[in-house]
Image 1 (cartoon, helix red, strand yellow):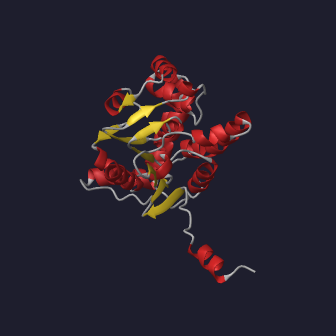
Image 2 (tube, one colour; image 1 turned 180 degrees about the vertical axis):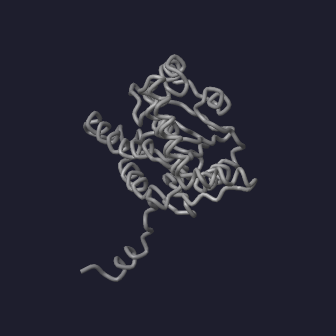
Image 3 (cartoon, helix red, strand yellow; image 1 turned 30 degrees about the vertical axis):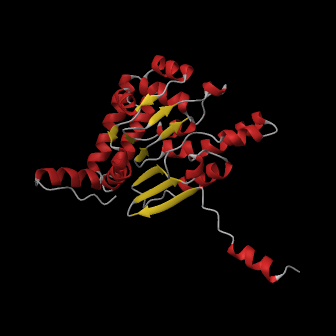
Length: 272
């Protein structure tokens, strides 16, 4: 039997902080990577917690906000954990597969995904940034693919999203040389959508998420589907899809309210 001292010591042991924080703010589902002492490096617990967090998106969610706690958004995968693995190949394959569960869900959401970047944004952190619809970046943030510098190849969808965003040749140059993208360069290349002062990242990203969450949710979903599917269509097929989508939108409650508000010179009141 343990003595009373052992019992007291166990009862006073601090509860480990969850690797991902989830909070609902109105219609915004705010997700925060929460390993600040490790630069929010991705390990199995964080990958699992992120997958669980994105599964909480429901009909009451109007936008998703993704942030990182501490000095960095996410420096990438946890290299110390990789190095300690007895079989690094299967280990990284399994970790990437876990992370990809979240990436696929986030990329396929109908609601807007707003991401706030600050500090270091490396490897898989940059991959996560690539799936945002609106990406707010701190002025001193540094974005780096990082994979090839340690002899690895990208995961998290980077090889799919960034060539489409910044162009194949510029992406290959960035990935192969391991260059660092400053915020203004990332903005000019279309990797991020807005650059603000470092201390304004959370506030601006939160403001945008709340604004979008109060917008025409179903129409946002149709827009995202048009853009996703447009990658695989020729122009005539895309024009047909656009005509169909705008017809559906015009007959929807959101479309009717939006047009009525415009004609009545007032702000629309979308119901989500």
